[in-house]
Amino acid sequence: MFGVQSQKDVIFVFVYKPPKTSINVLLQVLGQIQTKYLLNSKAVIFGDFNIDWCKQSRDKQDLEKFMSDFHYDQILKGPTNDFNSTLDLIFTNIEQCCSGAIETYWTDHKLCWAGWY
Image (tube, rainbow, N blue to C red; front, top):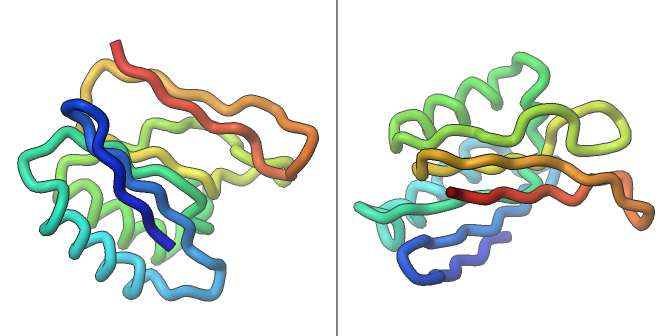
């Protein structure tokens, strides 16, 4: 599931990749979004990718290369859920940013945030 929203000079893309959805489907949709909405734009792509950024995997390598090819960095560091994994990711091509994850009581995922200065 995807959503795209523009706010001033920054475009926000919200992502949820169900655990059983293949990386190829994700990359295909992200490629279409990149081409249609994000060319030559400042953007933030964030959400639950269901790819653990703390572990090496083929899915992580493929996503990391794809995002790097479009000059995006994954800025959220550390665990984003109660199981010590990083499934929620924030990619951006905007410099000078910060991010974090705040504990919640209503879900096993943490509340993830990002800001720019």
